[in-house]
Length: 433
Image (cartoon, rainbow, N blue to C red; front, side):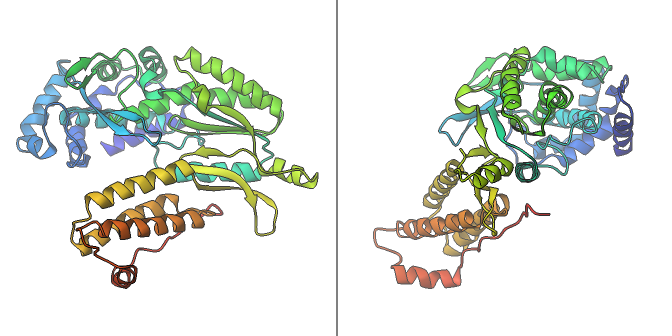
């Protein structure tokens, strides 16, 4: 099966406009069994409450039945279960949890779509892609800001991107390469499956449930057609100066050398989004001065280089000074994310303060290590060290709430920390490679 997907990817990579007419047969018993094997059995269950373990009890028969329904077009995905998770701004983010059998088919469909589209996606796209991620996006942004003649940044935010992708546009985009009507039928089935929100069935007339396996690749295909191709073949060719675009899912940053070109892009961007049923969040979208090139020019004229900062993927980019004292664009943990992570750690510590000390300290260090692995990038040493210190103070207070009597004096706490030390901050990702 992997060989067939690799062949599809090869054709997609070497053909300007490939047309795939026969794909549905790939969703067979072999692929579905492989998808079942790859799925995480510890994930939340959908509306039918069936787990991976329960589905495995009669796996051969279940897969045979699923293949038969797919062949007869009798397969009908169940609605996703709507759950809400808190966002950093205090609001709630809606997620959709599909039933286990639907997850199997979605993963198979995802593999096929990725084989076709991964070779077509531009390098500026970093979200939900092999060998790319948040760190590669942040690194490219750092290099662009410091290596190109950038003077203006367009920091834009799309309002409810996953919820407002138009179904008709998704199908039109897929139909550009995929001529197998059965695959398009299967995608439509998922788009129209709906969600169950607090016992109420809500039909899907637009969007795709964030949290479903297939949603990230559909989001990438949408952004590929709506934004990245448009930027590369229309916007960039109209610009006299240097420019760039960096995209992670629905988050993106664009940079320009000339202010008027940045302003023109910003205006056209609004029109472009509206054409495809999307809308910019005006309160979070803006045009601002930024870039080492502009900062250096201002420094030579004796002007201030304190530009407005902007956030991208949990990092704040600001104009600092290099070791040689020159203006330099640098990232650090955004204040909003820092406060959110401290709040989450405090809630977790107070909820788990009665655990045995050895287990508690082990879990605290696991959480600290996870924080370092994401935020431990060049120029951010002070912020991750500050995070460790804040966690240390929270730990002291939480341990002293285990009973009405204080568990530790300050000296006793320091002594305990010698036996159970907190893991030290570490830079995991260099921006200089």
